[in-house]
Length: 536
Image 1 (tube, rainbow, N blue to C red):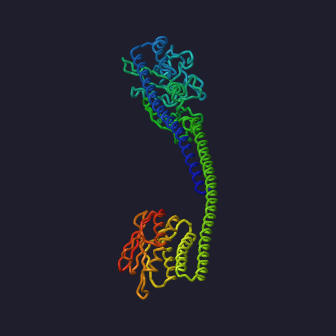
Image 2: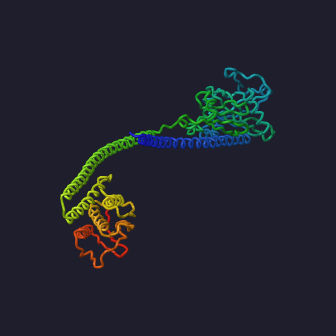
Image 3: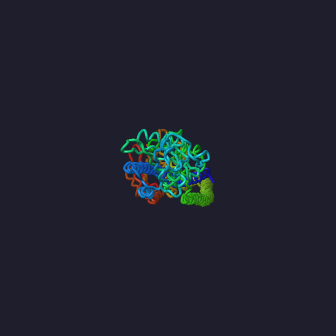
């Protein structure tokens, strides 16, 4: 496995895991956002419900005050008949009551007044101590469960007395701070909503109307649905933030959750309540949605499967590439063997031709006829041209072509060894000749050069020059020109009807390579030209 493949697999794993985790957290984050919206809605609805309930308190107290201002004598039965609708429709109210104003002189001289009571330190009812002013509970609804509270003096403790003094002074509704209720308090704070009632004749205060609230009942019934989402802690700002109510299981939890609590201030009649809304833990903790884990699992499984498939495919490709490389190496080795064999064949052909040429030399030394010797020399020249071709073939690295420039140079050097009476010039670009054309072309050039050397230069004392020009006409065709500065051809020379085996060979070879030989001859020299197609 290559380093690049390792990086690819790691990238696949990384991208797949990142995408899976992103989707996982997106699903859970969507739930967290929805929970945040639920919390915000619960806080907003809580404020509206509490404010609405406090407005109802004002309405009830004002209705009771108006009732007692316009009725001098009210019986328990009439009181219950008037207040029952309030108790039925307003679930937050614990009780409604009427407390007349009784001064000390009335307490001493009156014979029909009930026993006035107050509470001791253990919240037990005892006979009230003498004081200048009393506000005992006279009428109470519901009466039966709260019978013992009848006669309780509201003016017997400072918290209630402070609210009484305020409502008498302002004539407005006043709320007490957190107090301990006389009956059924269960250790839970309560509050009283009070309003003074004025005697229309004397313009003096004749008593108090009040509604009693136990804070756990008030908030649990008012915020029944909202408390499923948030816990609340309510403090009375006017009594040093004394605790009115909390739904938090432990008092220390508020301090721990202070940073996440939403704080609101609500005006409750003449007081201010500070409310902390604390989201339930299930709305704050990471939701761990089941679907998100399914998506995460499927994403990770898919990632590992893709990585496995990619690795397996790469392994398969590597094995195929290894097979291809092995097969290629085998083919290259086979080709090399074949090329070596081919070179060896060309080498041996060239050696055999040289042996044939040597045998002709031996034969020449035994001959006396000049014509026979000349015939053998011409044959030797042709054999040498063919041998040189095979030499160039096996010297080529691919054994597929002959370098024309090198061949012409070696051919002219061979001719120089036979006859040193001329000089030569070669103008030839780097061109490779196809094997099928190399031997015929070599023989044509050899015949033309040999004829020029033998017949064009009768005077060896002059500067005799033979020039060979090769030009690439286009991608397929090549022009070859052999030019001498000799005496020229006879006037009646016709290449098509020229006698002699040399031109017969030339004509046959030109037909073989699909080329036509042309010539121009003057007293200053002869030029032979041919154009052939090169397939390399």
